[in-house]
Amino acid sequence: MFYMKMNEHMTLKQLDLREEEVLFRLVDRNRSHLRNWVPWVDGTKSIEDTRNFLAFCESQYKHAKLINAGIWYQDELVGCIGYNEVNQHNRFAKIGYWLSEDMQGRGIMRLACAEMVRYGFQEMGLNRIEIRVAKSNHRSKAIPQKLGFVQEGMIRQAEWLYDHYVDHLVFGLLREEYEKNENLVLK
Image 1 (cartoon, one colour):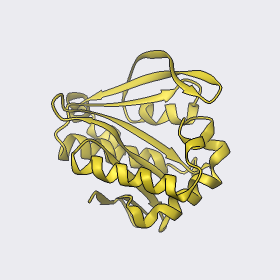
Image 2 (tube, helix red, strand yellow):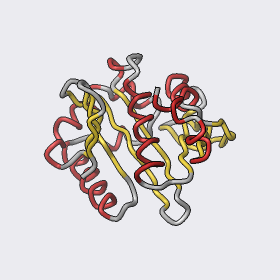
Image 3 (cartoon, helix red, strand yellow):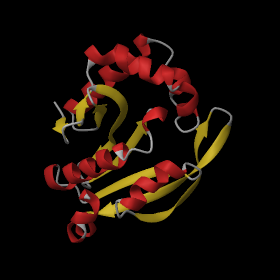
């Protein structure tokens, strides 16, 4: 099971079925906020939907296809982060993340992303890590920028969000860039 104690206040831990209710409640409390940025909110209508999602993540984790971790701050679930896609053959992964609206602006997500980057390069042997964010999501866009990712381009109309398409900015970081600037990522 994926688990990282980051500091005295923060832990990343793979979510399991025992946390279905706490995850559902967090999503439900942040429904209007999350709906601005992620396409799955309307499909999460019940604890059963959350249970099905967690069972899928557990299965995919066992096959090294993804990592889905809860972000625990002072023993409270405040968001999620993980590798939404892992390509072992090409040693490549995509990070995805979201944070409760009331916890933003505290550096929590930057620290969580930095740890996922470190883990990907140092523990998983990845060569490339990618983050895609909605072009208009300025808070989310700041994370890869602060961590030394390179903006590689834009995918036009990359995602359907309920009633409109959004463009995605693509940020990438290579192992060699990470090794040269490891202290930038881990600050």
